[in-house]
Length: 460
Ligand code: ADP
Ligand code: MG
Image 1 (cartoon, rainbow, N blue to C red):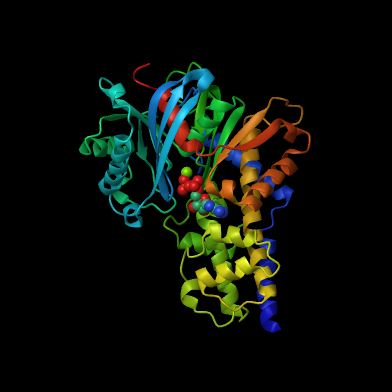
Image 2: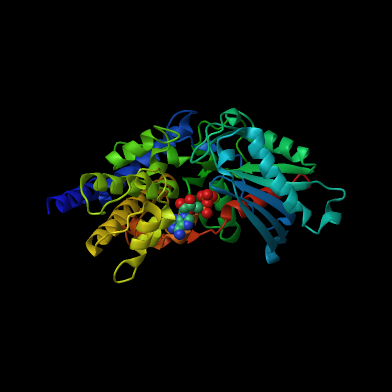
């Protein structure tokens, strides 16, 4: 009995430390809006970089032609080819290929990674079947590169740092467009990178291509980030002439947000300390798909070291970082079987925990719930922070604002998605939330890159 109490105590403490009442989320949203303003004021003004994207016009539908995109930023990368046919017909053809990145390339050297990507792209181009079209023209590509990049134009940017599972030292400080361009030339591929963007900017662009009320793009996948349309005059650090449109898309890099109002537990602290980027991406480590399963694993490990409710477990599995993935906790969280059979299976398959009572399985579901609710509610608070910064979603403000969201966490984890959406309503209030909508922008990051490449074509 004492042992069971200990497990319950661990869960009770977790529940309390992960609590996100609306009052706390309001503080998070306010802190986010403040950090955004500080990051716009001057370079290095905030932990969130508020990167100027050099996208001052979002695609409007008039784009035409065949364009490529390459989306690199998580565990997979995607190549994409779209045929755009103008305002009436829009995207008439779309081919994609998804390839997982061999793990050794994520921490090797830069030329190997880009060489691999260019080789996949070259093969993809081979089955295009439009080659006559490019006999006197260069193919054009939008490159979605979802790591913090310091941009100086729409076609160049140097890598500031890696995040998520990537760590390739010799690429930091280098121009990622130049590296890709070199790798493509080695493959004999005559293609021009017409736009370098981030997945959030792509999601925003793809969202607004279909719905002009989209003003924010959010990624909730392996990592997390957001971009939005800012008034150019609200960006003191913007140098040179103001864009004609009066607007500029800002890539917030909100993953690196941190604040004393965030609910952080011993599990988060240990995860951060043992991560590839300690002290960085604190907000991302609380909310994104790369980490939720890992947080749950750490809670289960603590419980198993305190008591024997998991039976006689082999600690090796439970001690292995990232062995429990977010899709696993999602499957357990959604288990509707009366005896929680899926939870039992996941525990057995992933952690070699084979002997659990129904009570224990219920407890595991609760842990998934606590960790995921905190994540979804913090993500909602981040969105509210952005909306407040641009004066949207406030009472009396009737202008429709749509938030386009892409990423496997939001797309596939139903409990997460529902919690995020209900939290938005809770924070904005019943009335103001009527003017705000969220919608899934499936593979917006890739499509958006192709659209922005089209909008910045050298043949316009
Ligand atoms: P990326 O972020 O790598 O570009 P995605 O947007 O496809 O790619 O997101 C993949 C991430 O989404 C995975 O790392 C995982 O964390 C999360 N994910 C994928 N499937 C599920 C699922 N069924 N339930 C919960 N999370 C999922
Ligand atoms: Mg992605």
